[in-house]
Length: 251
Ligand code: GLN
Image (tube, protein in one colour):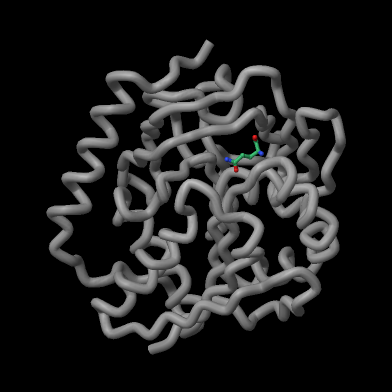
């Protein structure tokens, strides 16, 4: 079984160890005998819908976002087609913002987005920094928590058709006011959570992998065999306790 991951702009959008998410996906796939191939997608590289089972993009400073935004916006149709075809996606922070319609940066410059998520982001004066804890229900009846770290000036406003990724238990989330964080659109997820996200949230790594395997096989997603995640669960517990103790508080 082989899964192909398209990693968008690994040289530009990769802060707060976001590249670590790739290592977690590769490791958790290998422990189940699944071969995971990561194909970087740089500026001007082709993105052929159907080629990738999972698309990933990390975070970045306004400067890096400005460099990649026109190239990413030009891929709107290909991304839309890939996601409509059932590919999974994870977009983190700066990448999450640019998967929306636009990101207006701190200088007031509007960076075009790919528009695959129904949302817009406008940078505010004060950065929203700290540990975050969310409550999510990505599978009916399965309430879980996500723990991570956020550092963003952007305030993200979800459109009427957009579903948040989770409810903020501790932290600022999308805008420090709505009480929600991230976005979920089918198998495509966007979030402000860095850290990187996946090492301390193995359930989300496995869910994304199960969606990618489903895309590769053309079958319905099935849960992957469980792994002994003592270390991961301990890391989650520490991050969750830190967020509860000092995460930001919505206004
Ligand atoms: N530059 C964007 C902001 O400040 C995204 C930051 C990030 O990816 N951490 O909101």
